[in-house]
Length: 148
Image (tube, rainbow, N blue to C red; front, side, top):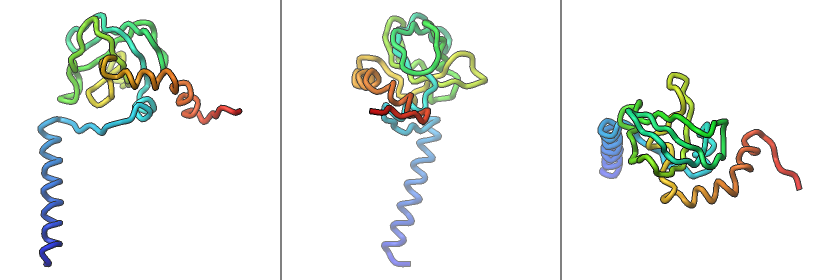
């Protein structure tokens, strides 16, 4: 076998081994999403303030709503899915952009470290974009188009 072919084969094996070991060590692998991709994949997108945080569950007072049906207060599970989640530094009194999902076996909503959820101070660009484009993304997702 020529040297170049053998080295490419060995490189593939090393890359696969690294990916598998990272998955084992981390418990999950996140694929970075744009705000639009995160919006489309989430069931609910809101901005809100955390009012309580107890045993893997957050209570969020919604201050801005972009997608999905929610009340003014949401319950969000954060610690049910191995190493992919945690409290993600979410402190009572802090404001967050939440890209949340619904999972039938979990009451309320779910966010994890792969969901693009984060503090409003680090996601100001997302919030500006959501304010400008969320209505359009909702229409486009339903197959509706704005006419001129």
